[in-house]
Every structure is written in C-alpha cells, then in structure tokens.
Image 1 (cartoon, protein in one colour):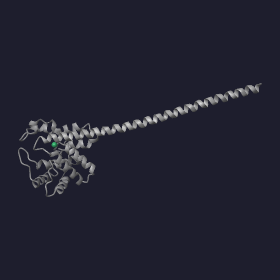
Image 2 (cartoon, helix red, strand yellow; image 1 turned 60 degrees about the vertical axis):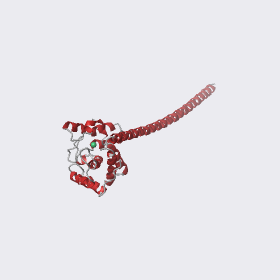
Image 3 (tube, protein in one colour; image 1 turned 30 degrees about the horizontal axis):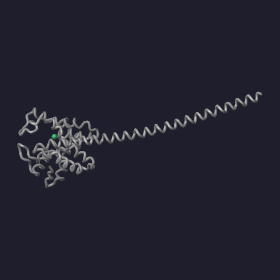
Image 4 (tube, protein in one colour; image 1 turned 90 degrees about the vertical axis):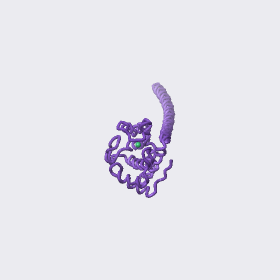
Length: 251
Ligand SMILES: [Fe+2]
C-alpha cells in the first residue's frame, strides 16, 4: 500500500515537474521574442538617429549656403565691394594649400572667407558707405562686425573652426587688432590666411576715396605689413604664389 502511495506521489511530482518545465520553456520563448523585438526597436532607433543626424547636417549646410548667398548679395549692392569675399575665398584657398594644409581644410578657409564680413549686415549704411575717414565712434561700430558675424554663425556646430576664422580675421600679429587682441601664433592659422588675402584684395580694389593699388605696389605694402600686422611667412608664400601677375578678379 505504502509503495502505491509513493509511486502516485512520484508520478504527481513528475507531472508537476513536466508542467513547470513546459511553463519555463514557454517563458523562455516569450523572453526570446521580447528580446528580438527590443533588438529590432534598437536598430530602428539607431536608423532614426542616423537619419536625424544626416538631416541636421543637411539643414546646417543649407543654412551656411544661405548665409553665403546673403553675404554675396550684401556685397553686390556696392560696386566697391562686389566680388570681394569670393576673391578672398579663392586667394585664401590657394594660400592655404601653399601653406601645406589639406584640401578639406583649405576648403573650410574658403568657406569662412566667403563669410568673413557677413557681420557688416549689422552696420548702418551711412557708416558702411561713408566716402571718407570714419570718426572714432563710427570705427567702434565698424569693429563690431567680426563678433556679429561669429554670433550669426554660432549655431552651426560643424563650422566651429570657420566661425573662429570669421571672428579673428582682423587680429594683428603685434596684438593691435580686434576683437580679442590676439597676437602671433595665438591667432588661428585660417584667420591669418584670410587676413593676407583680405588685405591684398582691399588694397587692389577701388574705394570711393582712392583708386586701387597696382599689383606690385600692393605686394610692396604686404611686405611692409609683414610681422607687424600680417604673418610674415604667409606673406612670403603669398608673394611667391601670385608672382608677377595679378590674380584673376572673378566678380
Ligand atoms: Fe572684415
């Protein structure tokens, strides 16, 4: 009798164990399916994040190009500045390559050069187009344009170095420039490059109060500015680069 009870109990345990095993297998399958769903959701989220990043990059680039078009349009209204930034961009790109910078960095210098005077959008026309020397107060306003330009560009996360070039294109080697009074190698290289190209193009362009200098005379001025305001090595490279013939003036 006792043997029958023990057998019945053992069979009952075995049934319970089987049921438990089946329940645990079913739970395992559910967990596996839940895991697969989680992995799929994770992959989908990663795809969304990549799409979003690409879209963000595209929006930033469209914004940059719109600002370049705006800078172009601002200059085009004035016959004395028409084409200035595009010429500075072309000269800046060539000088950057001569200085041994890789092509993508030279392109960044050119992009920043196209925008270097964008901050002049905040300067009243009477100051911007005054056909004579500026007063001290008017100079104060004029000297704000690198900061204004950098503020406009600040939201472009991918253009941090370009924004820095715009901010510092009026710094001078001896520290007498603006807005931060940086000197020598403390001035970002791209800003030193744009400064050389900017000064050359300004010197060779007509102004309401004086005609533009001839190519040779402008190079002479650049050589005299070497070390005091402009990077001497870059001036030497620039003089070698443009040589005897003035660069083309695309407008
Ligand atoms: Fe400027």
